[in-house]
Length: 378
Image 1: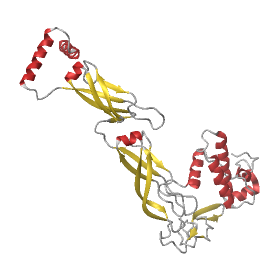
Image 2: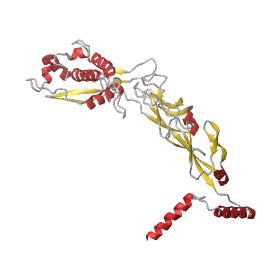
Image 3: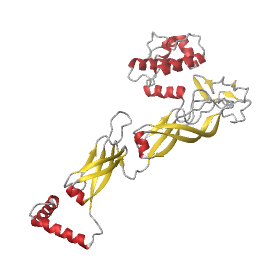
Image 4: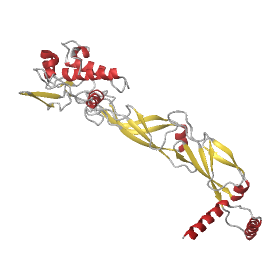
């Protein structure tokens, strides 16, 4: 609850003869100023935000305002004789109210005023090659969407005219009917909740205040984005109805498969085939990276599936300066299409290995020993 010594009008910075329009204007201004999203972790701002919301809840309602003007805070204190309903909303209610009243209902309902409806959010998918997301790039999008009518500037009225306020609801879009102790609120049947009437609709948009056309946007792709990441372009969605704010555009990134590299987080992986002679004797091979070619030294007696790590040849994180690595997975390739002479040379080589009584294949011997122990155990 607001401190009982603190006047609701003072909370909104108004005098007691303030109009309903002044109350709404000051409320919106203060709600934006003290909103928790703009003041993360600031408890005093959060408390002030609740005060502003409570004051507006009372003063924006004619019957509650009348009761407050007559009885003050006692009108909403259950323990007092006036015993009305006090402020019993929780923080989530406040959060929803502000987004509905100030920023417009993101699901399509509500808006900044009667008849206004925030534009829909749009989602657009683009497919980019790996190097474009690793190093960042800029791309052009062509998106069919609703845009503000240039002829009427979103008003929906013909040039030289303007919408008129609905005389039945006084521009509120809602009408209230008193039934004894109860107040019933419903959509104004005259303007259908628009709060205004257009006697001469704009011929370009037929009174909607927006037209459908193709929008061309230049989008910067930050370095390091990954498959499925979304880039939000605020205000680039569909135009709202009757001058309401536009929605947002979400660009979803999809990365094309690369013929050499696979990405896992910030690291890149690739398979590197080498001949068994190079694996046995060692050597130097040239391998590709996204930054260019580099030479990799293969030590003698390199085994299949050995992994070589090249530091800093991966992907930089979107947030921060951490750069991943390139991991090369060695694949030792057995020669094929051997001639008779080549086969004889290999047979002689095998005989020479067996003759010197040395363990040239430790993994093979270890495996056969485990197999032997397995069968002997059964």
